[in-house]
Image 1 (cartoon, one colour):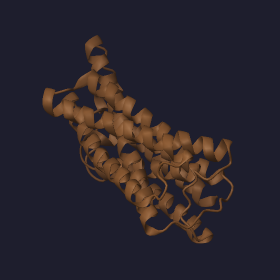
Image 2: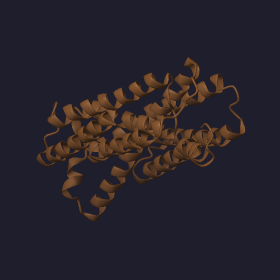
Image 3: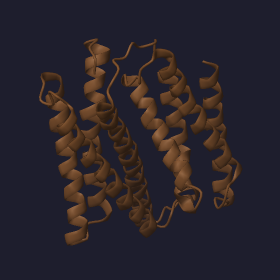
Length: 263
């Protein structure tokens, strides 16, 4: 539990330093918050590696998977936050990563089934897709807040820390594109490697994931064909992300926490 507490402290300290840098508009370069965030991500990953080494299997139970998505979000924010104002996402992402790690740390040791490399590849692609698309959902919310503030001529100080509207929209669609590719790979590996994809406890997960994939794909097609942007892009992104959350974490929560079955 010590490594969990140290990691949480590093995440929260990075958040505090990032807030100070945002107020001073000093986001460029390897700032102190970046070093703390990098340390937190490494400790976060190390905690999972130690747990897997102790159990002899890659644990993907509900809280562990949630923690890994939080780690992915924090790592992406740290990596791409070195340049530009995407670092502002860290004010939200780092506390989320800390909270997911605490949830994983408080959960009792879980005996996990050993997965072969094909199912592990499928699982890792899924977690990367969720982390990337969760970043896109946060960008969509920030885009909506920024557009609303501009319409009302109420641009608050914290909104000035965000990238300009056009840059924020570009970041949103780049994130969606990368996430869509990862989600496509996740679905393909599921079809190829999961023996009983349409089993009772996987049917709703498969359907919801496909619906999310279709919504994200429709949004990207609309962007290319008709230049969709602004509020329309925000709504499509959030609907697709809600479907994806229900597909994976919704089903895992019911199966593992309510029904006490493997998810």
